[in-house]
Image (tube, rainbow, N blue to C red; front, side, top):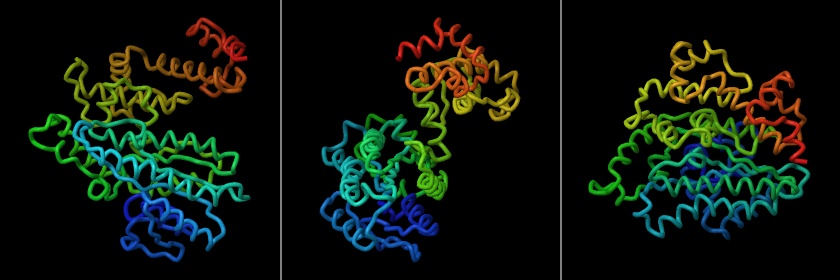
Length: 380
């Protein structure tokens, strides 16, 4: 069962999964809007704000098939508003649909899914807005942050009941989101409102969404998640989400703002904006590939520059050489693994990209003034 299937990601997922042999119940408030036809696809009326109606609809599905194996929580909308202008009704509705709607659907489905021989799967469609927030998107972003929290809780809560839970995080995705699923607070957009400078960024953001990835990419990611019992709790769809979300804790606030809006304006710094872009692109690539980083020549090509300029710019922006940056990232990750995972020193060394335990131990001592074995002993 999939919620929010009248357009965009939900519609693409419903059709794609039906094509791949799944019996799909496509939930929406407006079943007549589902104009795609397939023998495996059944439109069904679902109102996420009405638990009784939800429960009855899901009960009917169960009566027909005697099982519900997969739930995909996709329904939601975005509310753009300055916090000071939002009404109580606006704030409550955003969470009633985007967050409490998921709780209601899960409440209704879990009794029919738990303790079965066949593994149950719940997939919540999040967003990289749930990892990195934007001005004027406080309510939508907060609702997507909440989805990550409920996904984590459900993942542990339902594991003993043979139900696994994931969130799938798309980036900018072509859909009707900016037309029909985005509600603007009119007071925020008045000419005399206090947010004119921020409003200048909204058209570019809308353009980025409208020119985003094909929603089929999300559907393909969902299918991979369904078919892989060892999928991560959070699954990033290729695109902006894959790039930005893991950077949330690695970039400074200024870097995040530059990266989010693709403006790369550096009014209060002496670093050239083109140089900053080169450095940030390199850092992004290295963060994702620190265990096996590309050679400097290849990294430079990926950043549209040469290796001499890349080395110079990276050190200028981050005050560290590329080689030392990679080393620091590896050792920081190793420190975390030693504290949190049940791995041997050799396993940790390989996990962060060091094939020789002796070299790893030496570098670790140089950085932290203690040996890896001492961290393990402290944990014990």
